[in-house]
Image (tube, rainbow, N blue to C red):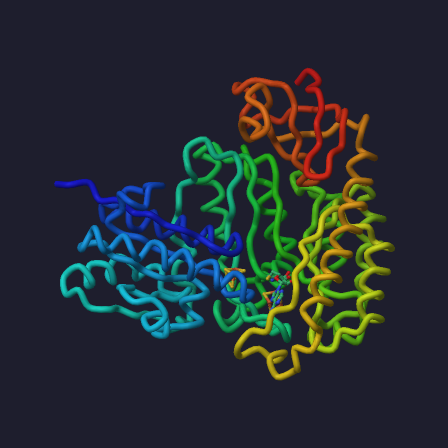
Length: 441
Ligand code: SAH
Ligand code: SF4
Ligand code: F3S
């Protein structure tokens, strides 16, 4: 029998990346081998993101390019999935001609059945219904060979309904996986050589809220800490309103938990935070940061900010800048507001002019670069524990790994170090990475 090849292109966040891994695994059972050459593919899947207008455009322009391969290969099947497919449903067919299947975020587990039906009847198949239970997170995706670090979804969906955000409509209500399933998956990953897991959820702090058993995020982390062979635990992302003192204490009391937290602030203006339906003030956020730093002085704090939310005045924007000056994040992901269909903010006028959004974003990014550089320079001379992941992208003689703070560290060393924890003395702090010399193990 002829080998069958699958080409997947993924856009968006780690959840989508993780979903794509699960798709590949399910389709491997149908005889599809992954290829990174779309020309060779019998099946092409685009896993799109809909968080901002720009993300949507990227996925569609790629779909437009790939669909042309059908002119040469008449048997090629092209599927469009993920958050963007959930958002658009059958409308995908009219935007790009030739798409064979459209599958939403709760229908990944049905892909084999959809593809089989498509092969038999060559008719369009659409599945975008929501399920009342977790449908695909329990599929175990073995990590690619040699992976040291892996993502583990501990929950799906979101109940927060931040005014700008489309995720609750695309991923459905929040549902947590059972601690047993999660621990079982991590143990399997460790057997495959994984040393570090990142627990994924839109708001991991509310993990377990709807489970029958008494288990919250803190008790889950403590259970994971007991898994033999696992070296490090990370998680993303944390909603500031739900960050508990118990979780903050874990940064001092749970040895495998790395000293890094990603916690999106979105704005420093209380008026805007209220309009965004975030459920905290700038003062509340600052207080959480202070607590974190009291418990764990070296904790690395990263965040997300949106500029140009409807009605954002120069004064609101300055409040964001002031908060950034007070906190000094280690790293920041910043975005221009983009109105999304169906969200509460869509009813507000998107009234910050484009050039103002651009200027605010640029100034904020310049300020953040200054803060990040200062933080990295301050680390020169320090010793960082690094989990070695592989060869450095910059130089064939160098290895790369991450410090507990999530910062990238490059240093001289050989491939035998992959998967090991080493101590590196930092000699230079750059904007995007640190460089250093390995001390003896
Ligand atoms: N659940 C995560 C966020 C996931 S989306 C959390 O709450 O931390 C990632 C980021 O995209 C958000 O934190 C926000 O900064 C940004 N974002 C979401 N919707 C947006 C929109 N409509 N326009 C611009 N940025 C947006
Ligand atoms: Fe979106 Fe808010 Fe949920 Fe994050 S917490 S996914 S920003 S609705
Ligand atoms: Fe992620 Fe984009 Fe969906 S950010 S949850 S893939 S809309």
